[in-house]
Amino acid sequence: MEFPEPDEPVESTDPEDLKARIDAGESVTILDTRAPDEFEEWHLDGEGVTVANVPYWEFLEGVDDDTLAKVPEAPAGEPVVTVCAKGGSSEYVAGVLKEHGVEATNLAEGMNGWARLYEYRELDVPGDAVVAQYQRPSSGCLAYLVVSDGEAAVIDPLRAFADTYVRDARALGADLVYAIDTHVHADHLSGVRSLATDHDVTAVIPEPAVARGVDYDVDYETVAHGDVRSVGDVEIEVVHTPGHTTGMTSYLIDGSVLATGDGLFVESVARPDLEEGDDGAPDAAATLYDSLQERVLTLPDDTLVAPAHFSDAADPREDGTYVESIGTLVRAMDALNMEKEEFVEFVLSDMPPRPANYEDIIATNLGQNDATDEEAFELELGPNNCAASRDAMTSD
Image (cartoon, rainbow, N blue to C red; front, side):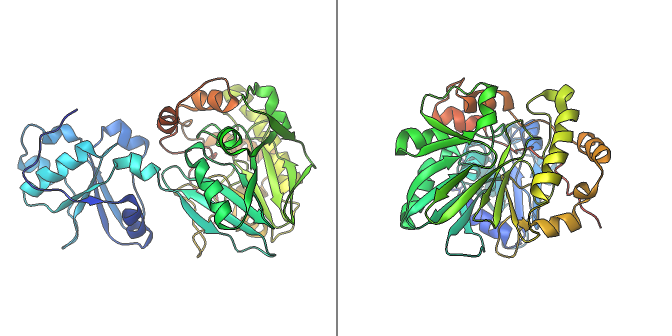
């Protein structure tokens, strides 16, 4: 809708600048002007963040003291940051606040702008290869770029950032040769097909995933447990780890980093209900237990677990990456030290709501549905919810 032009000019805050302030632990005051259900589904948060939800329509017909009392008070000298979906209603609200003597700034492009943030961080790994982690703060999605001797591969690429992987590989003196998925994702649109179509990259998916109805319009390769793909001097070993899905597959990079997809996170384990639903979840959870115990936790303790997601409960390392050694996770995470029956009961007891639009996202990732870039971006907005619990499952 068209909003009235406020009398006071409104400055904008870039998502990158706001993210830097939140990461630095600064006091940030946010007024989210979206509808309450949108706010509850996902919103900006973090240590040092004060956030309140007052829908924009409460500012349309005049503002009284009761409305202003709902606006959180920012520290002296700091503005309230207004936020909406695309930046329109929050810009109007920021202007209204300024008219009433409240310093305010607007988040440019709103939550859509926040969802376009994508950060690159290199992992501390042995050897000469570069292994970089991409982080999407809005949804907690993680992807990995592996670069060695002029070649590169990306694991769990996002469609919205397909060009980024090609550009970054070139900046590191490499050509992107493989785009690899760990499984059929339910929370975001995969970039595997986009990279194959637009950049002549070889698409790679787990062989067991094909049975779910893969119908790609591009050629692709499949990999099975024990297969190896070489990227320069680095070997990527295929480790089938079903449970989250039947095709869930991890990739052991250079013997030191295990890209676990949605099987194991640094704060939780996978949810088992997104493929077979509630009825199939108990068997899938039991399969997940076997995968973790027999194929993940048997690796050396110093092997880094590099998941496909992180939640608010996850703590980054000092370098800002969301990875952790297997040994540390075993010592800290209760779920990794349970017997199978207890593990299954635990996983099933605390699953969050399923990801928004997950059925449409799965169908699109299988190639059964089509989506424009704009439709794809809208489909995947919001939290990932792919873990069994968004709370850390660790001992005190």
